[in-house]
Image (cartoon, rainbow, N blue to C red; front, side, top):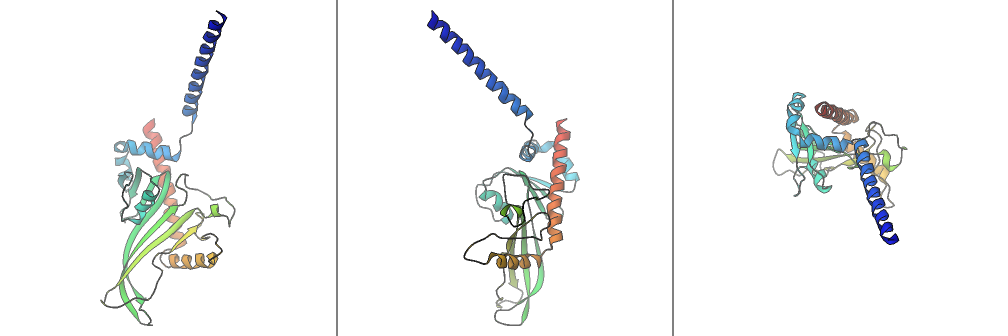
Length: 250
């Protein structure tokens, strides 16, 4: 009889403990602050309710599923390599793309122009047609973008975004060979200004010199002010998306 009473009380206590744990878990979930990831994914799930208003801001709306095969677009490779998706992409009238997964993740665009470039082993210049792809990417996929980077200058965390270019050039006059040029410059920057940059440290290469060279190659194509403008526009769009999510949730 005593053994029966013991097991009865034990089972009742165990059931009560399990119920308490479940209640606490529910309360924690209800009280959990929604992250930028939660907001973006909720908008994606109910994109039909948001699309018209977003288009009214002047953007084309695209939902990108998780990409299983490596894409040609360098901007989309960012999500392929990180096995991330779905992604919300807003494209402006000039072809600029702002992408959102865990908040604002990256901006990428492509432009073409005609310019003069030196020939191989010659002082002579020749006209070329160029295609330039620009990509601005936060380095940590699983965290929201920084509004102000307060990390210590010189530490790895201080350089929280990567800027990369993919430059293709073809001489207008066939048969001419171009001199060497940096067709794939990339660098890590502090998102506060896109001026301070550093690629890291290694015992084999002078990375400070390499970072300066990469910075010069990038800044020949686009200024720090323009990079900062694109980044802050992404933050502004993130805020507008969060406001739209809250409005639709009321």
